Structure formats: structure tokens, C-alpha cells
Figure 1 (cartoon, rainbow, N blue to C red):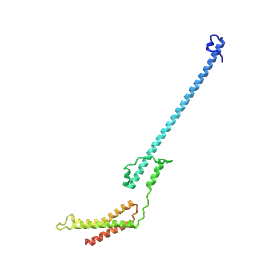
Figure 2: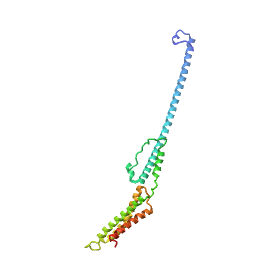
Figure 3: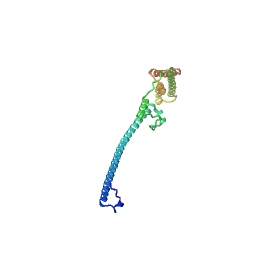
Figure 4: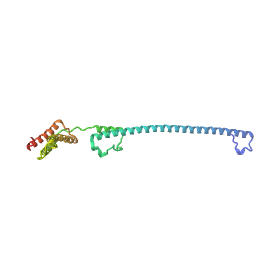
Amino acid sequence: MSDVQPADFDTADYRSVLRRLTTLEEEAAVMRAEAVRWHDGRVQAADEAVRKADEALKAARLDAAEAQRTLESVDARAAGLWAEYVHKVGPVAERYGRTKPPAVIPRQRGEKDAIDYLEEVATKVKYTAPARPLTVGVKAMFAIFGLVGGIVGAVLFRVLRNNAHVPGVPAGTWRDALPVVALVVLLACPVLAVVGAKKVADRRGVGLDLSTVVTVLVTGLATAGLIVAAAGLGS
């Protein structure tokens, strides 16, 4: 490189100036090449950043669509489990509302996801506690159902029979059917006692077997029959 500076051009000879101009052209060419390389590198880096951003955006859209499908699937499964739970426990579930309760974030999430929690809920919903065995006290309680049913049936039987025979009322009226209705009521009350005993047994989680049903019916019919016989209304 020549040592000739622009201020020396007035006193420098022709060859020195020519060498200096040639050197400046070479330096300019090097700078232009470096600028082109820098520009191309920036463009390439920008293109790479845009490409990665497009890929990230595409992946985010796929993840969002997958998350939406998962959310809809989880909501549908939760609604189904809630309907199954309501059908199983009945009005008790209404304390939480008539519709599916809103989702909550568990306090200790750990590594579980929504599907794991749904499986736990499904297991609990499907679980049915084994019926407790019938004890002497429970059987006595069911016998009381039959006793009460028999008493009620006998009382209604007597009331209907008395209304069927009213002095001064001509025959051929609706009162002629009261004896039949009285007999039906007499037999129906022990059956209703069995229905009541069944509801109580379901609430207590106790199995109501055939022998217990027979006990309630026999107790009710025997009680009604004894009361009717004692009152002299059997005929």
C-alpha cells in the first residue's frame, strides 16, 4: 500500500498517485465484498428466523387444535360420568347442582393429567359398596313395617266396610263396591309395607332378600287378619 495521502497529491509524482488510486480501488472492492457477505448473512439469518417462526406457528396451531379436541373429549367424558353418578345416587347429587360442576385444578397435580383423573372418577362411580348383612335388629325393623301395614290395612278395611252399610241408603250405588275395595286395600297395605321396607333398605345399603320380603308380607297379612277377626268384621 502506498503512503501517499490525499493531501500529498499536489506534490506526489504520477506513479505514486496511480499506485494510491489502485490501492484505494482494491480496498473499496474488499469493503464491498465484505458488505455483500454481511448483507447475505443477515438475509440468510432473517430467512432462517422466519422459517423457524413459521414452523413454531404451525406447531402451535396443531397443539392448539389437539388441546381443543382433548378439552372437548374431557368435557364429554366428565358430563357422561356426572350423568351416571346422578342416575346412581339420585337426588343426593343435586346438592352440587343439576348440571356438571365446573372443573377445578387439583391441589396436588403431580404427573397426572385430566384423563388420569377421569379414570379415577369412573372407578369410583362404578364402585358399588357390598350390601351389609341383615342383622336381627334390621329384620325386626322390617317386621315392624309389616305390622304397621297390617294395622293400616285393617283400619281402612273397617272404615270402608262401615261406609258400605249405611241405613237408609238404597242399593245399587257406588257403596256396593266398597266391600271389594276394602278387601283390595287390606291386601295392598302389606304390599306397600314391602315397598317402604325396600326403600329404607336401599338407603341403608342393606340387601332385602326373599325371606325378608315374605316376613314383611306375612306379618302384615297376619296382623290385618287378626285385627279384622278380633273386630268381628271377617264375615
